[in-house]
Length: 298
Ligand SMILES: *[C@@H]1O[C@H](CO)[C@@H](O)[C@H](O)[C@H]1NC(C)=O
Ligand SMILES: *[C@@H]1O[C@H](CO)[C@@H](O)[C@H](O)[C@H]1NC(C)=O
Ligand SMILES: *[C@@H]1O[C@H](CO)[C@@H](O)[C@H](O)[C@H]1NC(C)=O
Ligand SMILES: *[C@@H]1O[C@H](CO)[C@@H](O)[C@H](O)[C@H]1NC(C)=O
Image (cartoon, rainbow, N blue to C red; front, side, top):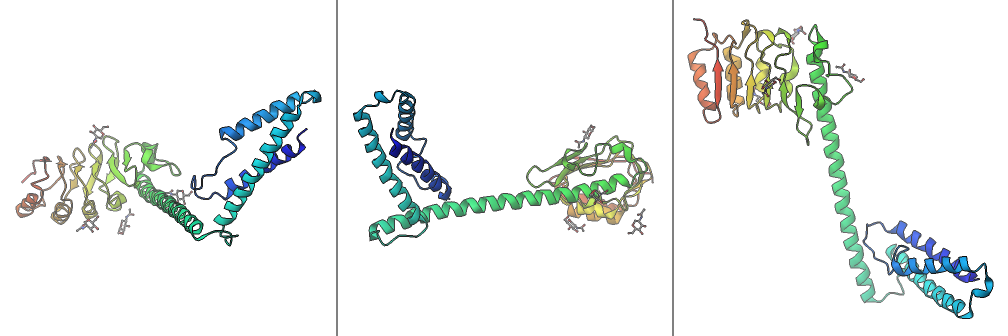
């Protein structure tokens, strides 16, 4: 029974899929129906029921057949409309359209296009942001690995493993969006060695907190520490008495890291710093909350 209807139904499904595929702006073009809309779904269900019942061919009445023929021709019209709309969207078969219809189509296309463009920009920016984060994270990782490998006992930072995300390493906290390391806390890790003349953690220029306290660092603190211009908290206390901060480095640090709120230098040899350099602290007077230095031997 209803062979015509079967064909029509299949055509309808195919055609609505074709239109779906060409619907490049999500939800932009609304059709008078979709295969999920209730009227069509209802018809399909009714058809399925009829098919199931049609094993008993006699039960299909003449009226039923007529009804399906009507539905079939309705679908035929709808398919034609969809196909036409599809052509119009592609800029084809426009000669049949009036000026008003053309204007209509134009404004729908323009709206659709602007949505496509804004979505494209969003996607592009998200991609760029992601790439930047990956790249920042990768740079930080190599800096931190160099730092780790400069110790004789690298096993001490055992979560710091090449190939893993450095923002998840012990003592490392990153900005979620940019992937820059913001906080490095290496307090109490028994790290031993010269005070980083070649240790590049001072190139992590986004650091806001740096805690190297309670280790065994010694020697002159590298003047490159002044690159940490965003520092809010710096703790170098409880290291070796041979850890030194000279005037030059001090001056550069205080002039650059103007947001310092906590500066803990207990135990650091600052005897090389002249009183006039100490007065540079007035640069920080508005931000400084906590300042601890050692009793420098005279
Ligand atoms: C980390 O791994 C990459 C790729 O495997 C390698 O090129 C790089 O040299 C490694 N970095 C360190 C510090 O070992
Ligand atoms: C660093 O870690 C130590 C011990 O885990 C903690 O006591 C200290 O407050 C931390 N420092 C900062 C600046 O968060
Ligand atoms: C540290 O850097 C200086 C100057 O760049 C270089 O001469 C020296 O060999 C480096 N030391 C180490 C242990 O890499
Ligand atoms: C101050 O900090 C900026 C940003 O990290 C850096 O480029 C510049 O070299 C620093 N200046 C000094 C004197 O260290």
